[in-house]
Length: 125
Image 1 (cartoon, rainbow, N blue to C red):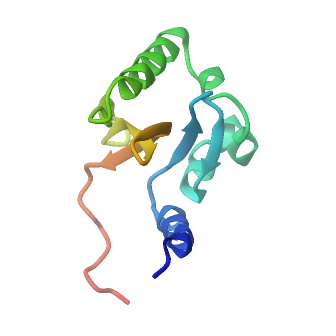
Image 2: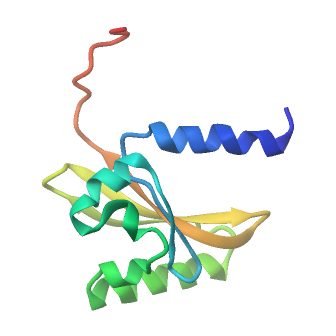
């Protein structure tokens, strides 16, 4: 399969994910939000956040932490994931993850890992 065709598959993976995925470029601009992110961040503008600065959505301490993480990502190709916090209310861990193109840092995204047991029945189709 040609690599160029994979982008459709990768986008579909993100579109189907139940966890919010917000992708930013190195200027901290939000360039993509999956449907779960649009819903999750609806009260802050949802889809209209695309094209805006992620830094405008955070307090000064968080902005400094985001900038430090991106600097750390840029410092070495092996620097690719950082645990940022645990959300007690939603029982999830949150990480910042580097996005690279042939090793070159091109952006980052926030990864959510929920810790709740699945309530869906197995193979309930």
